[in-house]
Image (cartoon, rainbow, N blue to C red; front, side, top):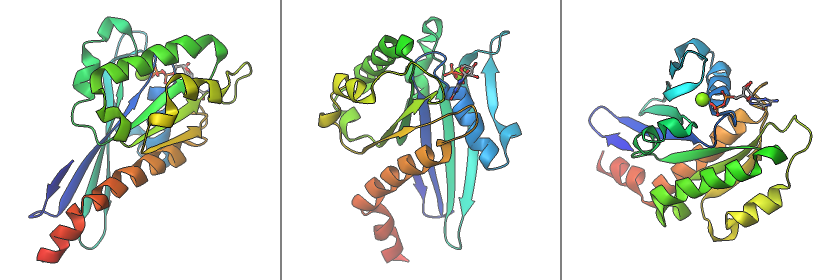
Length: 200
Ligand SMILES: Nc1nc2c(ncn2[C@@H]2O[C@H](COP(=O)(O)OP(=O)(O)O)[C@@H](O)[C@H]2O)c(=O)[nH]1
Ligand SMILES: [Mg+2]
């Protein structure tokens, strides 16, 4: 997060993370579609349309006092490009873990979560995050409770879970708002904003 008191700009970074083909790119595109900015998503793709490095888009909000810039990224899920993932995750403020709800994808979700854990360690506990159980439209889904148990959900703070269908945008805005609410709760918690306002 960058807070520029001079230009009155707050920049935050949100990243979609998860296993290959869970729907990260589709989620990011659905989000930008909601804001009428689908064409503004910048992707670096392979020749078969898979995310090569990351997808990126910027959403701007403004009130009388502050500009809020939200930088949104999605990582590539392919192991061949694993080296790009920790780079994309650098200095993030909030994370949306896009899980693939299909039973057949269960292990891949757990492996991806463990990878996240390996990057962040204990700081994953308090990081603002949403677990988005995507592909909720498909049959043969695993039990969310089982997955949450496997990732030690009870130890985690600043977390919400949602069910999404990125394909038609269902739940995508809700997930985004939930992660933002956690980011801003942290921000107010640190009294950064109220501190700045006091000086003006
Ligand atoms: N049925 C269904 N398919 C989805 C959903 N979200 C994504 N997909 C499909 O899953 C595949 C992988 O999606 P993509 O966004 O490229 O995954 P990524 O590798 O995580 O970026 C594509 O064929 C999508 O159309 C969903 O909610 N439901
Ligand atoms: Mg992708």
